[in-house]
Image (cartoon, rainbow, N blue to C red; front, side, top):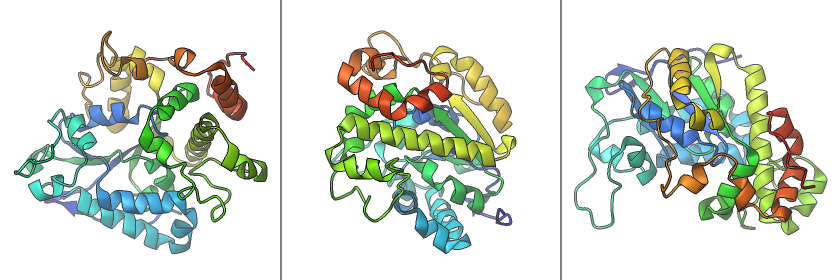
Length: 315
């Protein structure tokens, strides 16, 4: 049973129907977040330190949230109460990814002045967050904010793995000192669900580890879909974001009950863009080796098929 609604006031505005953008690493959640952040009336944050401390604690040790019960919801709600404050000092804690979503210049070493807020408090009526790996705190989010609306993004796992293999921050989670499989098993964060996978983990190739993370996230997304009312959860496909951005913006706008910026979603991939290779659909065909492709499809093949992605046949 969800907790009773809690009145949270930020800069004089009551938090009603906050929006949380969820997805596996490199799923495209940042694209949806950009559209929400640049829409009138929204204040969206990404990666505030207080929020990350709580969400990663829950992600890496789910028992913490389960043992604390409603206390976990209170801790998470307090983290957002601080993160959503709009002030120059508060916004100075935002990572550059958050400022870039707003279209602002990233802060640089040696900058003397605190970066200004990305929005004016008087114009804000809705609050949102798109911090990394927020998916693993989805149940706690709904306990903390019973009227929350969730936006989850799904992408072809092979494209996700290709991007993860090029991202040092993603790969850093796989260092021996961070993989807590002996303490937490099954482990949703790393997607390790059976003893054989756990025993093979120390010798597993990076493509296998990335595929397990993607598989674990989409299985978690499926469970979330099954237990969450339709008016509180919407799933967006990355491939639709790229091919039909305006249609996706219209659909998301109807779901949220407020207009979402179409401009922020238009022209996501242009020839010559620095990120064009990463953003394109089906880029895994050129970016994964045959061995990596076989490894990924062996681990995540059932989920790829369930989500409507055809397998390559390489295996």
